[in-house]
Image (tube, rainbow, N blue to C red; front, side, top):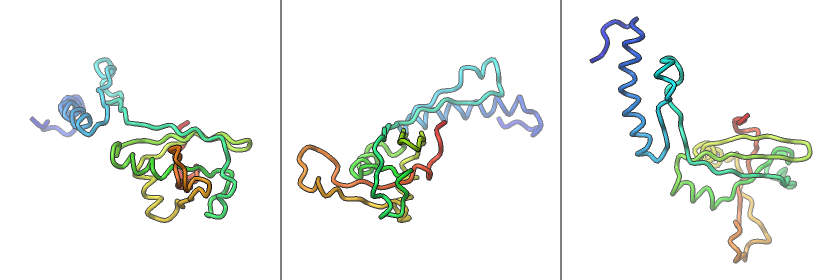
Length: 157
C-alpha cells in the first residue's frame, strides 16, 4: 500500500524497500549483479545497493603516436579493438571498460560504458585505425581498433 502522508519518510523507505527487491531480480535477469546493501538494516538512509557489472580492463602503456592524424592528441589517445566492441555488443551489452593508461607524461584510470563508446563511434568522434602489418594476420591480433581519447571518459579515481 502506498503511504498516504508524503512527509512520512520512514513509511516511504519501507515502501521503496519492496521495490528494491524487485529491482535486484530485474538486474540479475539483465546479467548485472546487484545486491541490497546489508548496512540498510542499521542505517536506513545509506545507499540502497551494490552493483556489479561485467567489466574489461585495458592496460595501456604504449602511446599511439600517429593518433594526431585522426584528430586525437597522442598524449591521451587510447585504442580499443573493433572486434572487442563487436563481441561486447553481442555478449555483454552492459559492460564497463576500464582504461588504465600510463604514459611517461600522462596517467589516467577512466571508464566508459559500451554505450558511451558506441556513441563516440556513431558521432564520428572515434576513428577507425587499420593496422597495416596485421592485414594478413593469422595470430588472432585485431586488424583494426577505434582510436579514442581518455579525456572523454569519467575518471575512475
